[in-house]
Length: 275
Ligand SMILES: C[S@@+](CC[C@H](N)C(=O)[O-])C[C@H]1O[C@@H](n2cnc3c(N)ncnc32)[C@H](O)[C@@H]1O
Image 1: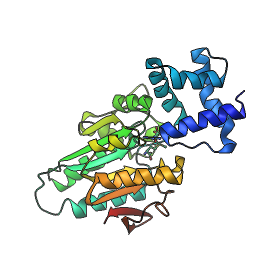
Image 2: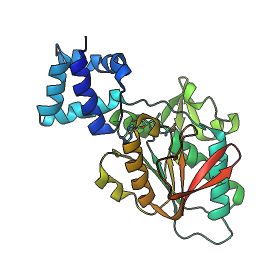
Image 3: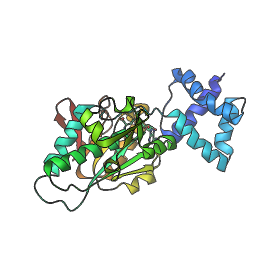
């Protein structure tokens, strides 16, 4: 059983390291997520687990990676929230494919990419645009997350039926190879996707992601409090090119978080432009 004191100590530790905030009524949730870690390490109390996180040097570091895996919620799927993807397509067509030949690649960042469905959806959409427009569209998609487990899975790029449930049959046939009821992504949708670790809490880490044309930061702000949301959005703002675009989750908002962006209204969604 996790005591109230253990909950507060571990909750504060998780918040400091990840920005994820477990409210007072989430004791059982945190307990159930950490119980496996305790069992695996052969520890008998959550207090001991806290000390193993805080004071074990090398081992502790690895355990922090395990902690990141278990405290994060990684729900995602291909072609999640079509109105946002339609808006993405319109933005790309209007602002980047305007008849001029492109020399610089479009730089897109899927921040909090989970198991890769979001960045690979964007890659498939761009590959389709390249085909229909008969124009070479150089692009690079950066995909980052705090959980090593999901990043490994994103690199494997083999997905189950549930994950591709909203993918058109024609795209499914074109971009996936079916093997034992699993769907392996084709190299052409992987080649321009670069996957790496990034923790939003690490202000220095954003430096590697400068001059982005578009940033997707969907369905992660909901786990943060206002202070962390502000910090993350400020950092993402700095990573965008002037007039670059930010897309956050459909249930998320920049209200009270930032006034620096211009909201552009699209059918069923809003895209934020650095202004
Ligand atoms: C629900 S998933 C969203 C995936 C995808 N963006 C989507 O909308 O389908 C949230 C992701 O945010 C990641 N995450 C949580 N806290 C983070 C942090 N501090 N830094 C980076 N990623 C974080 C989690 O590991 C998880 O994979």
